[in-house]
Structures are given as C-alpha cells and as structure tokens.
Image (cartoon, rainbow, N blue to C red):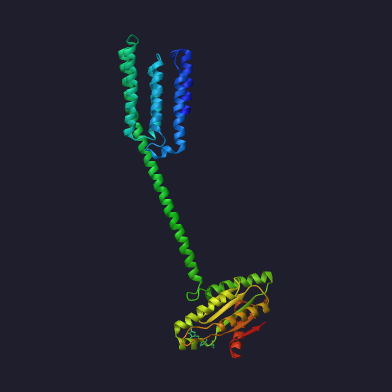
Length: 356
Ligand SMILES: Nc1nc2c(ncn2[C@@H]2O[C@H](COP(=O)(O)OP(=O)(O)OP(=O)(O)O)[C@@H](O)[C@H]2O)c(=O)[nH]1
C-alpha cells in the first residue's frame, strides 16, 4: 500500500513539474529513490521476522516518518500548490489510524507539525522575500486543525476496530468452547449407546440388542440365502459354583467364559449374554460342521481352565445348536436351539447337541 501511494505521488509530482506547479529542479529521482529504498529496508526487516519482537512489528511509525519527511521535502519545491499539498500529509497519517494508539497518533501529528513548521522557518530564514506571513500562518493553522480532527476521528475508528476485534475473538472462543462441548457430548452419547447395548458384568451384548440384531440377520439371510446357525450355551451346575465358592467366584466364571468365547469366536459371530449363566451366539457365516468345531474348541478351552479356589475348580458348558431354515423366525430358531440344549443337559452335560 505504501509503495502504491508513493508511486501515485511520484506521478503527480512529475505532472506538477511539467505544468509548472513544482520547481523545475525538484530532485524527484533522489527523493522517491531514497524513499523507496527506505521502504525496501523496512520490507526486508519485516520479512525476516526480526520486527516481530518489537512493539511495532509492522514498523508503521518509521514508515510514516519517512513518508512525512518526503512530503515535507516535496512541499519545499511546490509553488502555489503548497496549500493543496498539505492534504498529502493526511495520506501518511491514514496509515496510523488502524495501527497506532491515539497517543501515538498525537505524537505523529506533532511530528508533522514539527516538519512543516521547520520547513517554514527554514524558508523564512533562507528567502524571506518569497514568503508571506498570512499564508504561512494560514497553512499552519489549517494543518493543525486537520491534524486535530484526524486524531479525534482516527481514535474513534480505532475504538470501533478494537471492539470489532474483541467481538470476533470472543465469538471464536465461544465457537471453540461449543466445539469442545460437542465432542464431549458425542463421546457421552457413544458411551451411553454402548451402555445401553452391553451387559455390565461381561461386556458382551445384552439380550435386547441381540434380539434386535437377530431379526436383521435373518432378513439378510433371507435375501442372500447364506446359512445361519444359532447356539445357546449354558454353564453347567452354575448354582453349585455360587453355592460352593461364592457369588463373586460365580461372577468371575461368567467373565472368564465371556473372555474365552471372545477369543475363540470370530468377530462376525454375534455373541451375547442371554440371561444368568446362559449365552447365545448367532453364526452368520460357516457351515454346521465349522460351527460345531468352534463350539467344541470353546467347550474344551473352558473345561481346561482352572479357577482359583480354594479349592481350585473347573467349569463345563452345554450347548444346543440349531440351523436356520427359510421358514424360521427368531423365536422358532431359538426354541429349537433351546431344545437341543435341553438334550445336551439331559445327556449328561459338558457336550454339544446340534439339530438341523
Ligand atoms: N454369580 C452370578 N450368578 C448368577 C448370575 N446370574 C444368574 N446367576 C445364578 O446362576 C444360577 C443358575 O442356576 P440354575 O438355573 O439352577 O442352573 P445350573 O445350576 O447351572 O444348572 P444346569 O443349568 O442344569 O446345569 C442361579 O443360582 C443364579 O442365581 C450372575 O450374574 N452372577
């Protein structure tokens, strides 16, 4: 913006020299060359990041001072145009409106007055015959009034700008806060959803969730024609475990079974605690023989586990497996698995019974 302003003033100066508003010997090359060089130095300092540590990182004050000195020098070469040229000081002052405090704007106004009065005084001393007191006084007064107005309005604009920045910062902070709350809310929702579908003791899906999912899986099997198998698993003589080793030991058995089942089954198998010491698995993939082998592995793994006593003990399971038919609903499938489980219990427990 500064370079653009200088180029504009330079062009106007060249035009002024040509039409006689400036002295023909105005050293415009020297003045604008020096000014552009000074601005180049400012630019390099800012780009290097060195000014970041200073109170005025964009070097507004030195840039304005260079501009004001250039304008003062130009005024010396201006003839009748001096009155109008005074307005260019305000061009330089505009740079401070958004960046400088009111106090600094007052100091910059003082600097403008100092430069202008210095120029007038010097000219009065050098060539008093070319000067007219009333005009010098008039120019100085207009400049003073203009600067006072500028400081007042500039301060007002700056206050508005600061208020705007504060509001934007506060809005950003509120937005960040809302985003955090949103994340926490989503987190809480996810945990709540998890609590709603899981059994607190074992961490497995609960019966309600299982019943929702089994209907979906049956609908999917109806479309795809893929096999579906359901196993009901019941821990044997669980009441005795509670009675002999305590309820906490019973809970530990349930947790251990859940962990063993999780490790043995595939992620695609839908495992849930059906109630008490009874569990259910819906196999959405694999043939009856594969299912039998998986459940057999689970049966063996549980029976081989030694639970700490005293005295140490082991637990077995019985399971009934039913294969899904096109006419089956969730209820009929579970009922057939339950009948198979009953037979496994009746045949002496610690075994699998599969029905077609
Ligand atoms: N520790 C513990 N026990 C439970 C829990 N839920 C149910 N039970 C107990 O599990 C026992 C189930 O006993 P039964 O239904 O008689 O079955 P069982 O003793 O396993 O006998 P069979 O199934 O015929 O082998 C009951 O004593 C219930 O109190 C639980 O969350 N923790």
